[in-house]
Image 1: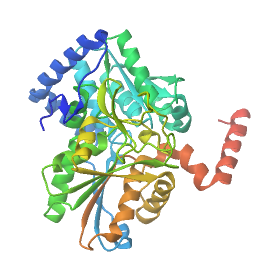
Image 2: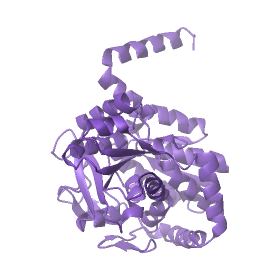
Image 3: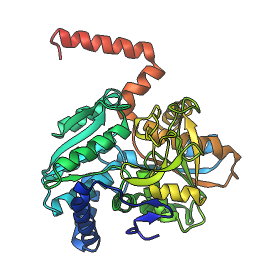
Length: 411
């Protein structure tokens, strides 16, 4: 499948308001030119090394592997990239493209805050003005990332409409772009939206899969049997899967099973609950009601709390190339603790969905199985979610003491 195709099977396309047509045509031409320009990639590769810290490690997890049946289990530690997640790969590439187009300002949407943080960092690095749109609920539960964005000089604008989460942040960012298309580039954070975003984000995130391929061949001399990744919109998963689509490697996506099976209790699109629709300017599978309106969603992880899925992943799921399974909030929380205790790694709640699914399935696999889990981010950003779950009384006591210290002027 070529990266510059507008459609992936019956999904994809570009359904945009007329006011944005010139901006998309400019973006498409600029991306085509950048892809063929060796200087663009040379600069980006240098920033991968010196600013992001790539390549990220492919870490063997021996204790977990032994616990789960003696498998050879590897964790791709994208959380060790600058800003704490895979999002910087795409944000930095698009920021370079924005500068190349002569844009002075970038905007972004964010759910878990990692894309917003990465965009703010990339903008600071390249001297661009930055504004990030974030649902009010997500701002509260991901405050460490909100603080980080502001430290990088970004304006963080709360979204008060709808469910006040990621879906609404996308809508707000797109609306804002229509008001300042001349000097602004929208750094969309996942492999979704109107063409050319799905293909562009996929290519910028493909560094993950390329590194996994190189690292696993160097360590094991063969391809893995399976690769697991969490799936919200789909940037980390399509990035990890992209180098293996033509190989005999099972690819498994973990979706947010949330707290139940009823509408509004989860964000699992690929298990049959989603329908084909056109929303947010692209065609894919969406959780929607009978009138086509997007349904509210839920996940303990802000980054998976999204009603749609990227068009390429929708196609890969429909054709059977990628298998999707849902993971509950409680399974993901348990995986955070298990990974931390067994390997000294604190994964993001999003990544914990992929880990939980691997932990569920590995015991039934042959003992010599070779498995990779893409740990897309680290979990310090989730402090305001995990601490009350794991140690509620101590967390409340800490917060009260900190408020008292601030009021006494000690901070």
